[in-house]
Length: 227
Image 1 (cartoon, rainbow, N blue to C red):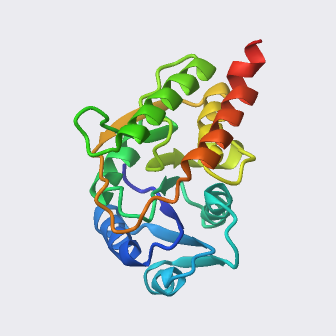
Image 2: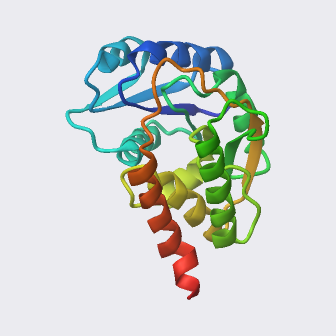
């Protein structure tokens, strides 16, 4: 896609070792992206790195959650008149070379999600199972196939960013966004991306607490509402 303004929103928590490489990769892959890094209360040098590589470094003094970071980044992207917003996690598990594939997918969709390969991938078994189950649950909620409901590597049209308003502050934000966007009639597509789990920065996903939040979202928006 040409003549579009792309903003990259990166929620970051204790990601000082990997953040700069991600931003460099996104700048190499995309035409002049406006990079927004939201430091979600890190205790390392994440904010210092962000100040050196981002167009808009933002810092939360305390941890508020991935959803809160994304919401703040989306607000800045809209103020900067972005046509497309690309989201990527700062922990090194998203290959920025695939960002153009997500952006180009918006020629026929409003929301493009990077779908990670589960079979034969380095994704831990527990995460593979929760990923598969969450995809099936979201698919039931929105009554259409879902390849990956938990991927944070996405491209969103300005319409989706401006009009879809999830309320969660943590990982459930991304699940709510998929459900609300689909129910509002926005077109969704999935783009194959590699599964990377060799990051020096551990995932900030807390299996028990964050899974419970996601399950609560699924119950409230779909499965429970059917009872």
